[in-house]
Length: 543
Image (tube, rainbow, N blue to C red; front, side):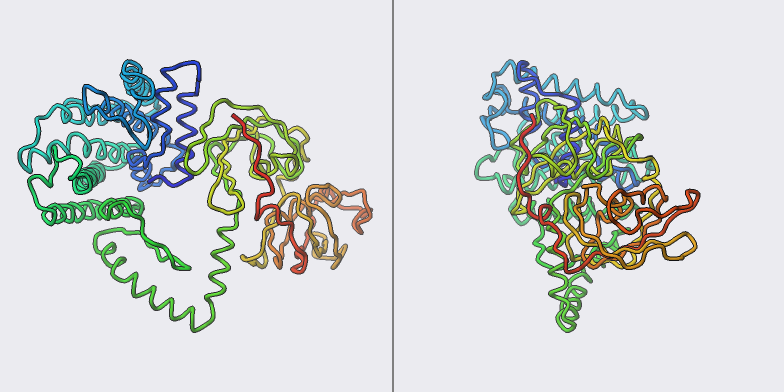
């Protein structure tokens, strides 16, 4: 259920809290279940609930990881021969089958205690969070539910579902609310939403698993239509609980709806998407009633005015982006720019099915836009020393991707501090052209003016490779991110216009106390190098 960016953040956090040690059997067993392909619903609930109160994912990801530790511990112990005696879990051998029973027991114990170690290290509200989690997984929750007798009626089975599953869902939601400084009323609404979601989750499981396991199954005491009516009632209660919240509940609503519908995501075949914040029950109902009407009207409008081709091009352009990143820590010192040499800590997190896992951090020195780590290097541009990112690189079919954790340790050949004073303004934006990146061969028309608007150079054209340092730094850095047909205005400190080749602005005496104004336009006929739209070569593995 986690989006790829948040999932990558979670995996980075897991690797920080529990680094791989192939010589330690216990740690290998703990990581084995943690890093297997999974939905991560409970972690998602922590992140999505805190999001309601405008809390960023990176601020709660350690708590989300702790919740994942608890869930993994419960799965390992559930699979043991003395409990459910399951041979498989998450499409792979269960922990005790992969290792042995004793190791599995200790791995579960280790994950549970590590979770509380993480939570006890929080700066604020740690006691409150620990109390909520303890109540959900102790004798009044998950552990207590595990020892209940086989359910003989609806209420007994519901109690088992409540204790074994729904209370941890609810605790995950409430913990997100606590971190977001929610009121008591908001906390209660999110807790109750988690209960509704958890009970739906178990009821859907009962429908799907009835033929394989009739123990503690609602289908044993109710007909399928009655179970589905029960699910619908829980769904309405969940929506009612979300309506008590004024923040962004879209993610929580979508999850509730997805679990109700067998976990199958809605088909998205439109060239646009209609979205709105569901601030209350009325708004939520209205959104889902009106959405098909709006889509029908938009379809007619786009066809009538010939916009279909444009929307398709916009959609394809969005999908063409092969390098994306998520900022974990911003950093505070010198910034990495095109063509600079940098020292990085780097390791591969995963590909899209999480089968390739990180091991140890490698120290790598590279020049941005060169060598076999070109794509990772391009994802480093704009980072500050001490900063951390997850850089995701799509392959040439845009289906598979690799993600890397990157920390910028040092920028070795720094540009002048004045580069931080560059100001770039887009006068015309063409969203469908390829973006200029470091290493591209481009043609630019430029004019340079004094601060009072008088031209120094007007309507000159230069062709160059971005990063070769053969043109003024202000122009070289200023073109990055432009698309064919774009126009930009750059306000630059004069010292960034110094150059040693044959450009016309070579020997001009600038007033160093004033700024210079540069007008740029990217030649629409000039083909931008295509290395960023189809990855030339995947970086070598770092593990």
